[in-house]
Image (cartoon, rainbow, N blue to C red; front, side, top):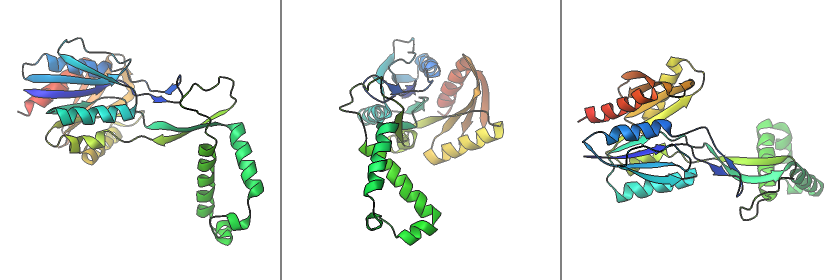
Length: 268
């Protein structure tokens, strides 16, 4: 019996207590994959980690764990894999690439920078002035560090409360989120891992090559590669690629779900 962990839907990253950064992930494909696994006698537990508004599987066999942010997702996956034997991970969730590091406004930022410039002297600069003048890369680095510090030092969020809708020209500083896919092999050394790669408007060759690089980097067994321009509701062109470079093309979400489940059980 194989225990299955599926991630689905799209994560959200909070700006304040009322606003978030999100994406278009719905969980539709993940829900179909869960239901396909539920049909198989060889399946043990199915744990479905999903966004709060994700489409849910119809099967009553599926255990639902709801999360919001990438941090929530990483914590849930780590906890589940530590407490349970997981044989298969299907990481279909649309994970946010960025989270909010700081929020300010153009006005606050301008005031901070003006004050900093007024108080600045050559002695206070963190680099040699002559080098700063003659080395563009140094100049860019100092300016970048200064801008980042200015945005962080003028952060207008207080305890995560809702920001005023009257604030003018808000400025958000984002930072990259950790890649959950890259952590899965260490958490589950013996599991079959299926990663997903979504691109937009690329050639089939580029899509395949990118998926193969993703597979090698994250030690996946399969990657489902797809182009957003080829997804229209349940019409969904996807390439299921294995680590040997073999691939099967599917044309609907339902056929992708069946193909992933068949591939997993064909390994036995």
